[in-house]
Image (tube, rainbow, N blue to C red; front, top):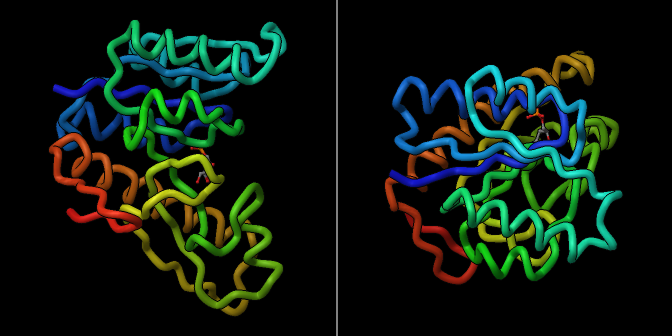
Length: 199
Ligand code: GRF
């Protein structure tokens, strides 16, 4: 069985969805470690509640990004992690981290990439007035929100919904889509060829 680590900075609803799917047996993997850069992240509470080992690593205690990331990679290797799952981890990973887990890091983004890369994607798409946005699960490469796309699902924006309503609908899609991608990942069904992912 493959070992997963989830990296999260915030409330961790995607982490929770992954925990629930692992428990149900629909993602056939072990959650080996949850890492956060935020001591108060609710994601850490969710992990502890589920009995998953946690690591809070404070970036301020390291000389810089590469020292911090080297520490994370060491912890991941020690926990024998096969795949790194980013779920609202609000830090850019260094090239050395990405090389250490080449093609074994996944991210979820609440928009249809390459549209609305970066933070606050949902409110930015809403303010832009798009009629269709969505969710993307992708492999992580050295450029932000850029690696090969595993799954995408569109979400239609209704004419008179609020940004909060749109956020809620997008998050529900995220929880389902990430689980779907992880099922395929741990079953060894994802093959990267150039920018395409075959499953
Ligand atoms: C999600 O919208 C995800 O797409 C983005 O960060 C958010 C994390 O939310 N990368 P949560 O902490 O999983 O609730």
